[in-house]
Length: 257
Image (cartoon, rainbow, N blue to C red; front, side, top):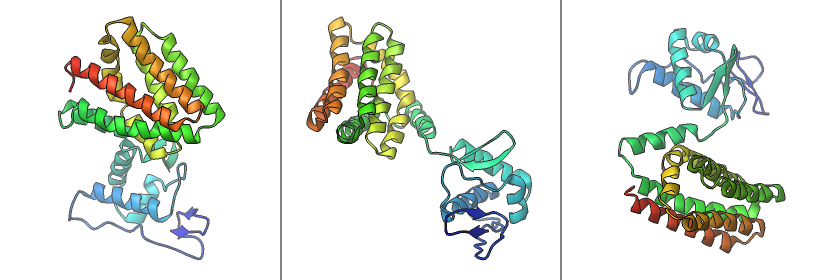
């Protein structure tokens, strides 16, 4: 394996500088042979500083290099694909996948459904993260992003009466804020809440039993958007805090904890 100064990788060991760290894993120890191959491929990605979209060796190439069966390698790549680390398909060699929140969202939903964490605990985390996101979005947003956030708040208002569409619009709103915050890990965290919001969002809207309560929450979203547009960091944080204080109150009244 060759690690070139630019970070590109010669999968076949051609070139002057060869780093042959992808060798046959040792049997035994912690985990199965498949798990060891997973760790070996991960180390290959790390050591070569590979970025999303970079091509990895094919299953055949890895099996030959490591001296193990293709079936073991195939199972390892399936595991990496399930984890959102590698993408495969269409007859292409596997590639490094761009990180997204899907796997974190699934893990979060799993933790909730198996009663390892509660909705209340997730909302406590969201409240802290989203307040900081609102602050950073007000600091770093572009004009186009600010306008998109305002339009998203308006789309939420236009959906009033349809709790499922309102929930979708609410998710879009928070994802736009996270993107504008310029912190990719915060964006991943917001994406990880998606399944939980899809489940609790409609109930939250339904539990606001008067039009005034619903309208008040919609207006808070618009206020957050306006503060981000005006780059009013304190106002954005304050509005987001009111948003979550009200949401936590409604969910508690509905018996969700």
